[in-house]
Image 1: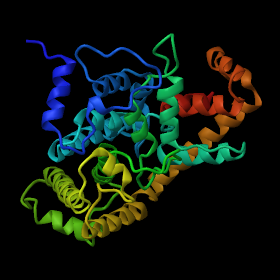
Image 2: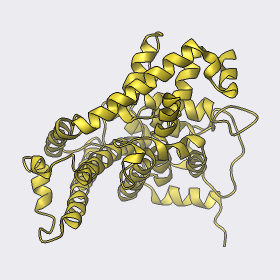
Image 3: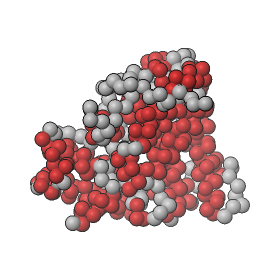
Image 4: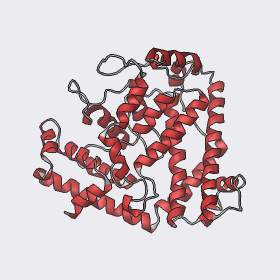
Length: 371
């Protein structure tokens, strides 16, 4: 028997928490379109995101290490998949809408530049010179609303309002996009914010230890690290022990987040999705104790990994590459591919150049830089 969209929607109505976003409650799309017979609106959004060129290019964009550094280090694509997996698992535990959560998670880094956060920072500096700004979540929104062309009738992917809202209100240490609305986003979007932090901190520990740049001895002073050691077998070979430690860290952080979120939902007497939007603070967050341990971990990674000579050297080169490409294209627009140059008929040149460079993979940008 084939399950129809209506049956999936009925399942959501019966099974999901009263404050979860149901597909039937979606505010819809910018451009009206007929419903799919088998997929809910958020399932369609997820599928559209996965099939974009921007999503495929994430495989060649740096998380911390450049792609040619080694085969086992995370790319933006792997990071996005890990965030989606963690988000979906936690959404299921909290009885939230897994499909909406997954769609937001898969799209949250579509607008990231090459060369990680260093690339984003340099692009922002360049855009400020033209009275503009760059923030990769805002670029993600621009990609799904304008740059990705999937229909002859309109630009963009025509995603549901709830997915767009989750993108533009994505908040972590490295994410601070502007938003037209001050209302809190859905619990599904809030959950992706936290899953992003849990994922990148723990896979950065994994990649840092694997590379040899991050010394495990510097982690011994961390309360969270010592707590994870009590949950991990100590008689394992180093690689298996390290994998066990990462698993213990993720479990500790996720469990704390789930229990604290459930507690806050009850304390605020949340009954509907509208109640969530009216709160003045995020309901998906760590307890005070975990937040302090997590802040200590972030500070340790910043001092001993992100600012290490090996990582800093690559970040500096990434900034130089982006600046040279940007200034070259601005000075000589004929260097742009013909298809890209046609966009200058409707957009300022600096915006077109920004869109082109932000969409590049690390290796493509390095190849142009060498030319």
